Image (cartoon, rainbow, N blue to C red; front, top):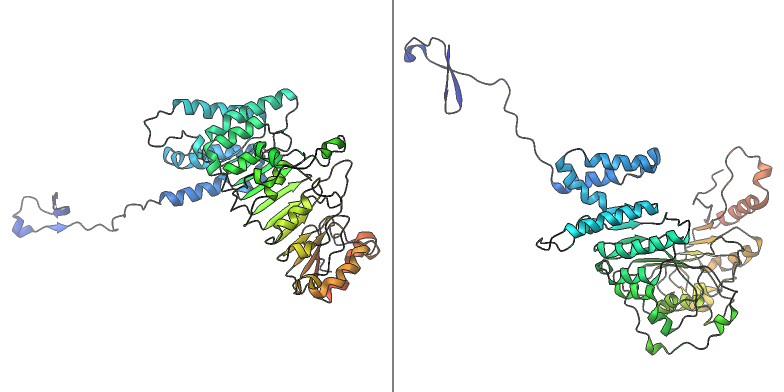
Length: 448
């Protein structure tokens, strides 16, 4: 039997020495159809798959930080194609938890930038331009020498991150003017949207101080800022003459900041600062969430917090009054006109001593849209004022005790009715008649 190929068809000749017309030919038909070529997934699909793998939080919970770092590196070693897709995603979120890691990362970006030639179509070097989120919140300098090293490395690092969108500082690192000037002068200022963990300072707020403040300069250059968090050291009683420095300069000497997209603002343990002064005298049309430490018992202009709430409270939907835990903890009073100055609030979180809130209907003539009230702990002193304003809060659905947890099942009924737990259950019985839930720190309701 002979085999011949004619136009991609396989023909079998059973008797090769016979006449072709007499013997004939048979076509070889495959038993299975031809396998179609495999379809390639689009690059966008691979990017989403790899991003989910690299940023999977469950892996970090199971293996810890070191195990997660090993898994992330193993993905880069699968093949060259996967490496080309995964490398930008790998560098998009950078978390540095030690001075050694910060130094290695900065040196790597600096050496890569030096090798980047000017003939490329993209002016920014890799991997620096891939970094979109930088988290150094775990840095804890052990000595002044390490603080100086961190300061120098950050000053060198920010110009190499032109596409940085989120920056999480360490609350243990005092940012100097040199670091903030480096950030304000870098190309990242046009993309920066989240700035958290800033360690602020307190000083009398004035137009001149706001114009000279490095952090205000960063905000002036970062028009796309969405979220800002600054934590100060608290009220400084060591230098009382600092707060008798005289009247601030006229507002005309200060040019307001342009922050049309700022939605979330957190300024803790800071009753006055150039930053707070600048934000107070700037329009913030998108500000809907505010977290501050109350200083209502300190008069204006020594404290700018109450004035800030009154100025920018019109559009707020979430207002949290919170004092960070420190020693000694000094609690200051809160304004009683919060429902008046913030008529669009949906969530109000109060701090001790809890103020007697003004009756909203007597002020505005309409029902308030407040849905959730949070207090540190339930108290008998706050129960009566709260019940008196409930008719003006028809939308209220929950009261949350943010420092209290419900006791687990199996605890005796006597223990559940004692102390704070007893108050919680008493509040539950009272407010359940109005359809209002009592929630604990985990936003859970007692079901028994």
